[in-house]
Amino acid sequence: MSGLGAVYRKELSDNFSSFRFVILFALIAMVSFIISYMAGVSLKENLEGVAKPKFVFLMLFSMKGALFSLVEFVAVFGPLIGLVLGFDAINGERAHGTLVKLLSQPIYRDAVINGKFLAGATTIAVLVLSVVMVISGFGLTLVGVVPGVEEVLRLAIYVGISIFYISFWLGLAILFSIAFRSVATSFLASVALWIFLSFFVSLGASVVANSVAPVEKREGADPETVVANAQIKEGVSLLSPMFIYSNATATIVDPMRKTTRSFVLMGPMEQISSSRFQNPLSLGQSLVVVYPHLAALIALSLICFAVSYSIFMMQEIRT
Amino acid sequence: MEPQTIIQTTGLTKRYDHQTAVDHLDFQVVEGEIFGFLGPNGAGKTTTLLMLLGLSRPTEGTATVCGLDPERKAMEVKKIVGYLPENVGFYGDMDAVQSLRYIAELNRIPGSEAEDRIHEVLKLVGLAENGVKKVSAFSRGMKQRLGVAEVLLKQPKVMFLDEPTLGLDPDGAVRLIELIQSLNQERGITVLLSSHHLQQVQKISHRVGIMIKGRMVAAGSVEALAREKFGVGEERFTLEEIYMKYFQEV
Image (tube, rainbow over all chains, first blue to last red; front, top):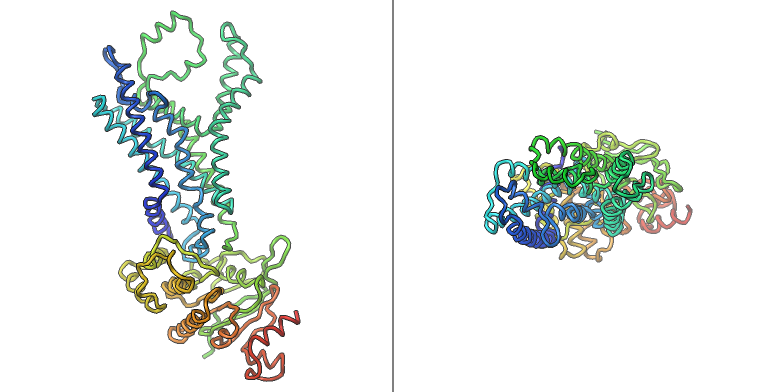
């Protein structure tokens, strides 16, 4: 690819030497220390007296300590990493007067977008991996748990999905940096979209579901209405990448999770029996649950790219 | 032997929503000449240059650069044309050598050869001692010369220089103009030079073209233009007077 390698190398070294990266890394380091400490402490308490706990190592990542688990943290704040890395990708070059110079070299225009995206994705991969490593390391020393093969595999899949998820936001930020001339506007626009998709959509989903198929009280409600309500809620929530990501990672890092429990109505006896015979979902089955969400994430990223290309290719490059 | 035509435009037109930036432009530049590309701000000079590079799409008409259509063969054109944009920007946290190295990579010049060329062009533009200085600490004149160095790095056949002397002090402008002239004479690089420093343009240009409101109102040697407008040769009139005369008539 013409020019891709050159752009990639330059952007990557820019990313790693920039002040932005130092700040991000400091933030991430802080968070991972806090999370591993909180998770470690609460793990010890929770596991006291349990005979044969399963997937203890994964609990480091999914267990809510005093505030939040890593999985939740990445779901909510991971997008910010992508946005910060990408919001001025193209219009920043434009503002510095380097875009025309860059494009008057014998390279393809898409090499610029691709190079910047890949460099950002590499940076994201390094960040995510280092957080997971830090937490794993702390888990090993603090709690004394050693991961099994399946746990390592699950963790690898989790890291992969997280990189895809954050990279989607990077792609979105790059799209905004192409569409908007001003760096401030593109940053605001991407942050606004992040807030909307991450927080407002889930709120809107229950509003829509409750107005279309209202469930008055949990006991004795019409089962069909309950199902319809849940389906509408889920359907609207799918608009939010955060929801997709949470669903995609949930069964991976928390194999004990029951995806349908939220709206299955059970009596007390049933609850006892279901908790007694709790068994983890196998890795293969977890992947089956996860797969459609992963596909949706990748599709979203591809749409972002397609729009970016078409705008950038048609755009007049004057400054 | 007839000199080869390097740039040829026929009816080249660029229209934006409400205005015509370039209006049926016909002109040519032949190999080895310095063509002074004159005109007031907003006359459409930059737009023309961008169309010649394939960065902007003409609404009508055609252009060729060394016989290549910039719209279809943009890569080939950009390999042989060095373009110095108006107010060229640099990555502030790089030093001069790093900037040049990036340009060399983008042009796929292999490593060892790139280092040789970087040294050569830095010496040529008089920045040999400033190679490891951050570009953000460069003066405007130094930045302009670094811009020329970046253009020279790919050893172009043609250079498009858009207002290279803008904002330079008189001494800096003269030195840059002399550099351009020596590049033309020693390396045979064809130069398309847009500038408001008419005196300097007159000194080094073989031919000039005056572009006003998207049209090329006159093109030829300074002498020919003077004869056309005033009926006498170049000695009596400066390019400035000729330019003003054309400008007032439009």
